[in-house]
Image (tube, rainbow, N blue to C red; front, side):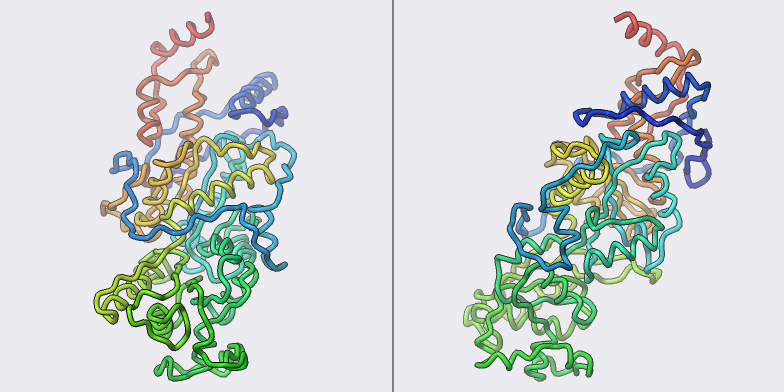
Length: 499
């Protein structure tokens, strides 16, 4: 087998017979591979060679993760929460909370590893797909020399739309079918708060979209900055609502009573603000209020409701050649300005999304259910290894490494050079593997799993075990060098056969 400059697997794939059905209790797909190899041998079909080395250099050593130095501890959502949702939310709600009906077992699916992907800067940039991303999806869906399908999900800090809309967009961009059952965006875990709070302020996004998403999650009384400005234009002196905004914003004064009778119990920043100045002003007003009552001021500046951000990315990869400011920057501004206007009081806000471990735990539950509903695999245990591919060291890599420290299974961080990370620099949070593109990441992960199974054969067709050097390479996140001499392994194989 050969590789091209992008480290793409290029060996022609022979037509392979279907594997025999496996039992749900199977802990790995090694036995199925062995059956397939036997059938291939009977048919006289040679197994694809796996001699290629990993051509991508990794200057980083293996990282065990660092402790989260954030001063916030966001609520860790639970799938047992009983949140009522509207019909619009049902496609995503079902895979996360409803009883799982396993699909029939797919005999060609890898059951001991899976992939999870960030989107912006990894698969898509500026609304357009990164070319290698389309090929990477094909590899995961079975177009690889091993003929296996690998389960995968998407975990992005972005948001501002229904999950179903984001899935339609991604399906079009990647030329595949993406289901809400394999997709988490930054504000998805916020649905678990629908029964916790009454009146909430929802910030960010285009038009009324985030209000609609929040209401689909089951939030009962959702107001927006536009509603507040419509009721009192002096709230944001430098912003004039458009005719469309005036029409779509709700009339808070029609509720009767005064503005101060409206109590905001929590603030949720669902998506990036489209008007930082007015949104900042309104968020600070509520943070300084008496228990969330609009147009009031606390004497001690410690009575405001909690403020939740769907993620904490200060930077993100967009169409511009340089990275752009994200929601994490707005969060820092809110906290900094509050400290200035309150005489030194600290404002503690909360963030979902990466790098919060609770978000990765949420992703683990979704991945387990997706593997069961889509591939017929047992839901009781997560895959032994999850390869997370991201472009932002401060969120993607930090979060994956932290999850790896806490989780019983392995979370393996891979950093790509197509997004926020600047090639040639050394990030604070180091990945297990640094590659050029998402296609390189997928190829590396699959080869690493094949190496674990000892898929190499000697000249007589006998499967070779891995030597100490290969095992060490795997533990350090490197693809082993398969240019092996026959002598060290022939003896080990003979000993195994005798036993």
